[in-house]
Length: 174
Image 1 (spheres, rainbow, N blue to C red):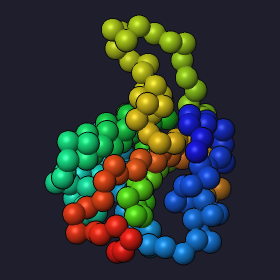
Image 2: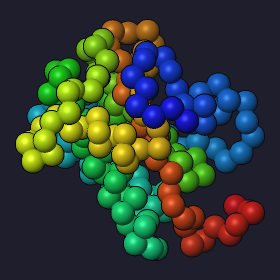
Image 3: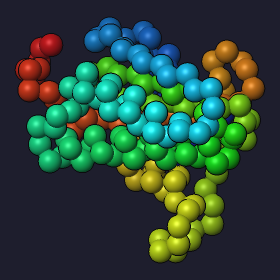
């Protein structure tokens, strides 16, 4: 997987939306979309939307402390990418969550064509400027891509795997 790849059009080799995922047999990808019309309240709406999806997909309630931490990581990552879209791109246009077999892909689209780039390292004690570092540390992979419809702007995506399977899924079977 690529980590922190901010070049347009690059996906992780194991991503849910890439060409390999479409050719592979396996569990279906479940997709949820939240269209956002204005930036005010977007972070809260996206977090609430993600909380509901995680519950439906068996990520919560958490079975282990590691599962609880992973669900919290997902909510922090969603907050980070949506906040970045609000601060640097006039707000997000859409949040898309794709889930398949314990892998979650989060995609946030906006109308700004400028791809995120890391700032000069700052003191951890100072507020702001740490969002991409958070993505590097908590996401299994992340990057940016052109919008699938060819419209202006970009999609910032990240992927997170659940550390354990839900209790109703047995190893080797669904």
